[in-house]
Length: 211
Image 1 (cartoon, rainbow, N blue to C red):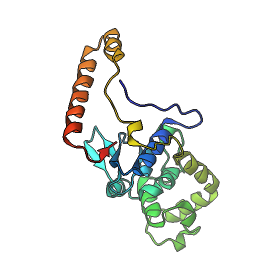
Image 2 (image 1 turned 60 degrees about the vertical axis):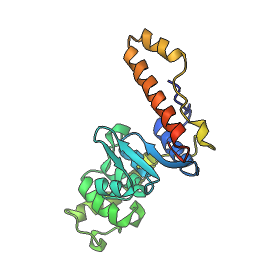
Image 3 (image 1 turned 90 degrees about the vertical axis):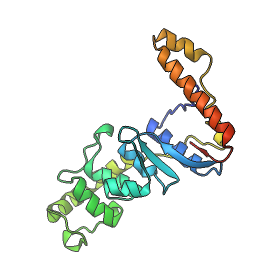
């Protein structure tokens, strides 16, 4: 299809998305970076209106304010939030008793696990069952840190130094043949139409690109 891919040997696909978004956001040629997945862990990559998350099914583009509205925490606090509530997609359960509302209230206020007071008496937010939740957090603090580490995406790779490294030039000549083998000529037609539309827009607007 002509789309750039990266082999991730020690890291995972989510790390590749996070690393690419981080690299691209530093390039002046790129006006906005779209991360095309609603996965919770990728929300940590969102930065203002510069890096946004696209939820195609919900037809929503989520910027930093959108992340706060959905999860109740800032993007930088998403790993801490997920450490408490868990993430089935990535295979860790979170801490017992902690739900989305309690985690959003506490992490939304304190930002990170280390900043949450050990005693619920010192909490400056009202949470149902606060004393029990505080006890669970302290008893399982090392586990929470492990879950946070699992939720934290690595952004070292891939390194992108110019937007041309990922600029889509349309499908390779062999793509139509592969679609025919897959008995899906419609896919070849759709991709060809997208390529034609992109080329037309590219000629008419030479300014910063969106990735």
